[in-house]
Length: 318
Image 1 (spheres, rainbow, N blue to C red):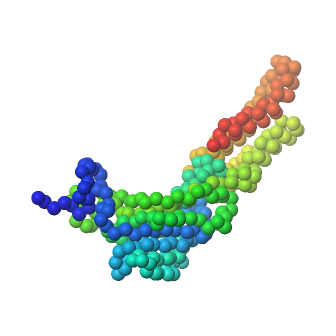
Image 2: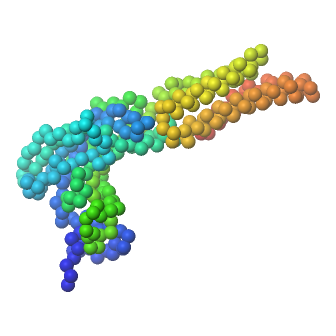
């Protein structure tokens, strides 16, 4: 009888099929990981990243000489000369288990989803794994308090939700130059993931980020009340709305413009066109047919503009 592949458990009758990878063997040694986050800052929406500082500890029940804890890295981290990845601060032997403590500081890649800005919720995801993706070590979570946050941690403009942690893996769609293993189609790297949901406090961003839109609506209302300087007020409304859009586009990635902000910009400009077109028709067209109808529509123009604008904004708020 031919020997079984190395990555297949003996008591595993499941046929994984030609397009699936074999599971990581439970016979491999396991390194348990826990994390305590001390600080999060530099939330950069344009560069798709944030910075995190944390205390990370490991528990290794295998041979202390082969302890792989020093090879851990933040797999979705950004490393340069100014950032120290892992600094071991303590190591102890406890009842046959090697316990190690590290201080970690790193920038982390985060692809923000800003279509709902400023009503968005994000998940700060940190993926921990071994630097060598082919190292035959399983990663797990410590039994107690595998992921916790400093109770004093505050994020300006954000509220923190309940964190979560789980064992995960990364599929390697390449043999990385190694001879292919029999029965293994996709190699998998064992990892541990830590997620921290954060929710933006939207009211803090409405006034500073959308002041230009508010001014544009106010100028349109004034143009319907003050007839002798109507053209100047409408032009100022166009400039204010356009300037607000340019301001937001300079602070957010272009993907944010496809959501709430883009729809809001469309509503503001359609409202300006409505004011111009309705005012022109009432003053220069309907006046020649019926002065009474013209006066009635003139009275209804301002509340109709305000009502349509508020209704449109209410419909696009996520």
